Amino acid sequence: MIRRLLATVFLLGLATSAWAQEQAFTNRSTELKDKAAPEAATLKTLPENTELKVLQRSGGWTRVDAGGQQGWVRVFHLRFPATTETSSGGGLSSLSSALGFGRQKSQTTTIATTGIRGLSPEDLKNANPDTAALAKAQSYRSDKPTAERYAREGKLATTKVDAP
Image 1 (spheres, rainbow, N blue to C red):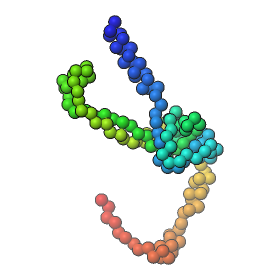
Image 2 (image 1 turned 45 degrees about the horizontal axis):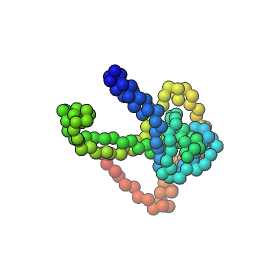
Image 3 (image 1 turned 135 degrees about the vertical axis):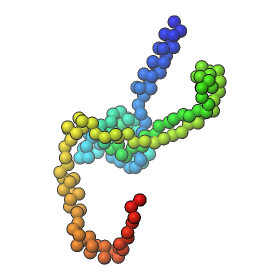
Image 4 (image 1 turned 180 degrees about the vertical axis):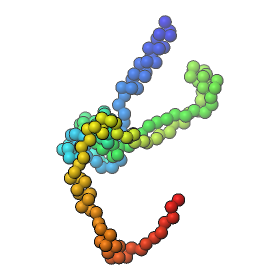
């Protein structure tokens, strides 16, 4: 009977942590969009260090709740804190502590990470190139004589840097 009770409590603890929403903060002023797209309507501008609840991730975008208003933010404009706990000791001291018989010194460390690991096959399948953005980027291109003239006018000097 006690085993079942302990197993139930353990599973409820796992389920609760799985249901908990991840916390994030804006790392710069950024726009909350109504869709996960650069051309989507801006719902509002979020200042730097705004606390958010992460609801969903999709490629380079994250659906968030910003104080009751939901929308999409670029994932690179977010900071994801994670907390880890390390303990001294091991072996029997860890076992006795887990069973409630001993004390250990513990240290909590906060780590910030960004969780993009690449594009899923579905993301690649649904990708749409932004031809306007590509054309704009290509409009900034310069030919060699123009770049050399700009360097001369700006009194820039050639510097040789050895590869590491």
